[in-house]
Image (cartoon, rainbow, N blue to C red; front, side, top):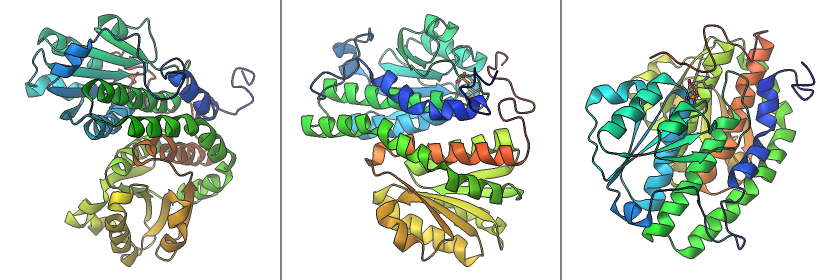
Length: 370
Ligand code: AGP
């Protein structure tokens, strides 16, 4: 069994370390040789259809839904098409507005999640073109969808999804760039810059994984707490939600993810002396605002850990207790690096508590009931 785990104690840790390869594999053959364009030869969606897309709906459950939150921001930023995101089990029951000019993107690692499959069928019945982002090409969701973008993460065994999520982010970056090229919404220079930054991600991630010891020490510290908070704005909030789910799922520590600016509208009442708060600060456009939100929790005695870039570390250290630095990348790409520190955090917290990391209580890898 240890051999199956490649020398790692748990599949989850092995899968966290497989992410640089999963990034490379998911990009392979989907970027032209000059590194200037995304090519998605598998897509049946024609340029004409792409020109006619009026709205996009992204649907998934749990971690796949969280990838969709990032996908929404990526597509709206790059392509300027309105995007909605839905939890699959809610989608069908809110009378979603779908037309033949709606592109529905369903996201599922396993391709067998019952709620996501039901949402896919509902969207198709209403005339939408359905594109699946999945890790299992022979799955029910892949079979029923009109189009498939396969994530090439390889089999994911641990119940807690890691490499599937980050590969879904890569799929969204590729798709966003492809749609932008067809619709002419980005300059060739901007596309090239983003492709180059994407190609640097695997190596940057390798660097991060080499420094996982500092996250381990912090994880052991928080494992004694009952509640904690993740805060961030924009894409940092999307990553915060995934970090919070991961921690709950395998460490059983209660946590909440909050948009940093929303705390003062109620939740701030829960912050007391020593409450751990993990703040993500990678989105430069809202950096100052997030920093003032950090000061709000600091004034209430919170114990704050920040995930940010080197260039902001010294300033932030004046108002927080600890800083974890991630390699510099473009704002849209930071989730693909920042989330890995949160995966490691939940892994080491779960380990410190003596839980079965790969098989958390009450949960199944693939949820085939609605
Ligand atoms: C992730 O850590 C969870 N185990 C869970 O939220 C999962 O992402 C969700 O059930 C969706 O699964 P799928 O991607 O296979 O559809």
